[in-house]
Length: 216
Ligand code: TYD
Image (cartoon, rainbow, N blue to C red; front, side, top):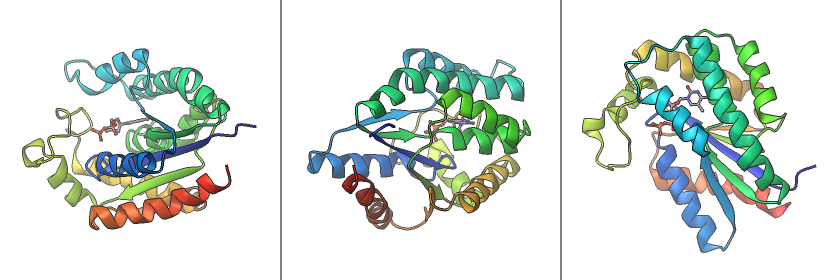
């Protein structure tokens, strides 16, 4: 059995994952707790190429099923080369997204099917599941305001992606699926209200992460 711990961050784009991951990194660094930070898609050199195809090539037509497989190809490479070795070395891994995103975006919002995407996820992850998933929840109206790059004061966001360009209905479906997953897996997926002040959210995250570190 792996000794490491895997924590994933999920939510609609613009919910504040980047800010919260940075705050958690600072918290870990201040306590000399070693960790590996990574992301999906794009946590490996192959993944960086796949990420570019998936997000920043609006000229390229990608079918929903092909999209689902591309995310899983990224994930297969990521788990084999980055996440599983880190967990086996007893490390703490924090990842910006994991397979719940595939279930919500491809399985539900794109209509590929939740069961199929869940099956592909088990194969790609070799059965590994995050110990904790932080779901930063925000309604799609607020998300719209935040993902508009023109409104982004932080300068942290990349250019608009293929997903940012989707209709509001699409983002509503993604949120619906994330919340449904959180109801099915309440022990693993913790829903935090992303409209609250960042510092308060950070404190909630620390309260969820600390117990995981204690029993390592
Ligand atoms: P992310 O890096 O979180 O984007 P951002 O930092 O811009 O919020 O994720 C990129 C996009 O890919 C995001 O819109 C969600 C989507 N995505 C899926 O559709 N399926 C997946 O399996 C993953 C991991 C991400």
